[in-house]
Image (cartoon, rainbow, N blue to C red):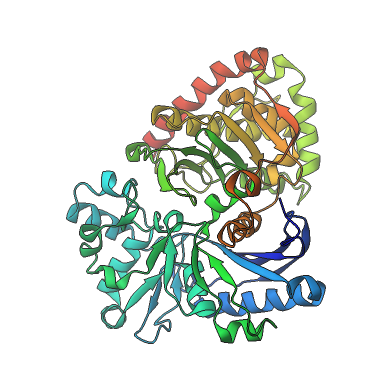
Length: 500
């Protein structure tokens, strides 16, 4: 990957998350040199609200970089490019001087539910134009909320930036975003990869309020002289890549860049991600249709709100604390008996509502088919299975949209469980590879985008798919055992909804 000229260079991936800033420094062969994390605090001043101070992200980035410089001073001094990844959908309202007018409203803020209805009323074809259904988590409804409830703030707003793009502004002096993150605003025509004047006008905005747009692998700007000096790089011209939203960055990090490639993420929430060579959307089933971080590619994304979170919940509810490993071991022993599986309870994992395919914040979790003989192993098994069935629903939506993944990688904390990986393969029909470092986050994808922007290789070499250390292929017998249970699972949502 690296020639003699670039062999001693390094590249920085910065992931601006909700709970922390993660910084990863890699060499030209993508060997990790050092990493450093800085925690972030979150504010919930009112019910449904979720906010952060935008300057905390910037301070966190500088602190993370200082940590890397302490750990690897010589390597950092050879920095040749920076890539940014970040939490999506957040709204940072800036004045004429580029300073925040109020705390940033985050992706998991739910206050703007009424504004979603108003936005779709103002733009009847919004779902097809933006590729997505209006949800409180997206950026545009937040702008409508601020215009209604904080009119002085809105009147003073000269620009609205996403979280990672505010960091970019402070590091470079340039207001720029890229296609994957901009897709989550409801202001982008996702098919055309351009700001949409009608969508902007529906929230009282114009293109002048938006940053410029580049592809994620392109140079967006250069570190300012002030930032370069602060980082010990005075006199250097360091390019900053366009970067990506967190899931698109994670996809780049696992080599999901070609049409048909994708990943299954078993994190706190769950994601099935699939790359396409065209814009595909199915908003009525809550498929997220976004641009990918690389040119001429898009992706479909099915999102479930409780994946590993459901396992943590049942462990806590059973008094096991954080011993999720012990819980999984119990479920593994339970699953060895086909009879036990056939008679196990069915679990709906909608502990925080559900996104794909129901878009129902009021949906609730439940166990069905409980009997006196069911102990903790049966309950834990049912939770793991219920999450696998929710992934099956997501794959079903992607298939209906013409975006079913052909090659998938298993990532996230849940990737540690071979039982879960096999169960997801059996329930979804996907063949899923597990790679070493499956828990690596979006920072690696950001570093890869930095390499592309700096000209340190082409897509094929920089964004190579890691070798699989294990493969989960659907097992016909187990899939047959799960099939009638999946039908029961899908029937339960309607019954649960009818009881509300």
